[in-house]
Image 1 (spheres, helix red, strand yellow):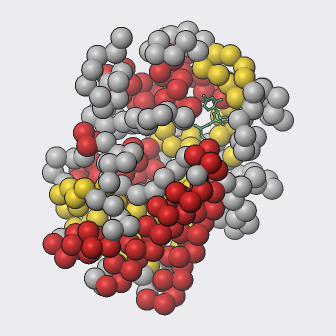
Image 2 (image 1 turned 60 degrees about the horizontal axis):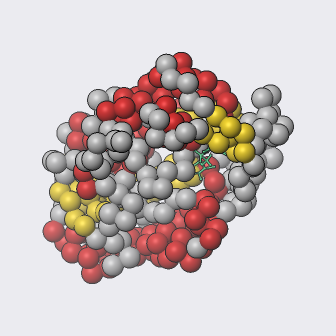
Length: 333
Ligand code: UFG
């Protein structure tokens, strides 16, 4: 029996595949390699290169492989891009999920763990953000993820496909042994940009605004280690296997760190200067996003173990310093 990981060549999906294989699971990966990396594919996984919107392709994978459960990471996930190109997000994220659910129903596959986002909440009325709070996404990206959740809810009601939707806060870090890590092109995320600056690949990092209503004026986010995040996916899979009902969980560390605090933490871990300049605010950035993750701890028995920012940055630094060009082979200049 196999677990199908859609988007298993991406940053978060590849970490899921490695942990599943560590636990003795048989894994099938589908990825169109639009943002995924061939080098991130675990050598022991069966890999099918293709697009989840292509129903004939997806059906052929379900016909060849004994798939029992699905973990769905295959989506576009950049807030800024989603505002400029909303139809790309509706097409790949929403339509792609519709095709996936139809294929699952046809093949009687009734369990799915889904990669959702804190962006479904939009600008929160208070923190910490709990799952009971209203979902009012401010970006197309967040809206498509919310619609994907609704698609799964209706599909569950009609066909009994059980789902767990995991709403991620800020995911960072890398596998401790550093075979895989974070490599986006273009890079927009804070931790990799800080570490690229530590490596001298950028002259400085621009802090997007220091006039927010926070103690040091910079935005506060809740950073969760990618390996802890994946632990929650494995716990969600066990929950569904044990007959758990469809549900939604936040995944964060429930601790907030400002952009300046993250840069300072990276200076301590790397011993590098990491020059920083203050720039303008980035459109759409809420000032504070902190998760209430008690529900995942209680219901899924999720036990995040790598909760310090130092550990997140240490593991990310192992990856970045040993792979200065990410998955590309050339030596850094
Ligand atoms: N930041 C900078 N300079 C940079 C990059 C980021 O100051 O060069 C700041 C941002 O303004 C923000 C913080 O660092 O305050 C974190 O930014 P990221 O881009 O790393 O992450 P976001 O909080 O914007 O986004 C993350 C996920 C999204 C998800 C969102 C949910 O990456 O996929 O959380 O709110 F939608």
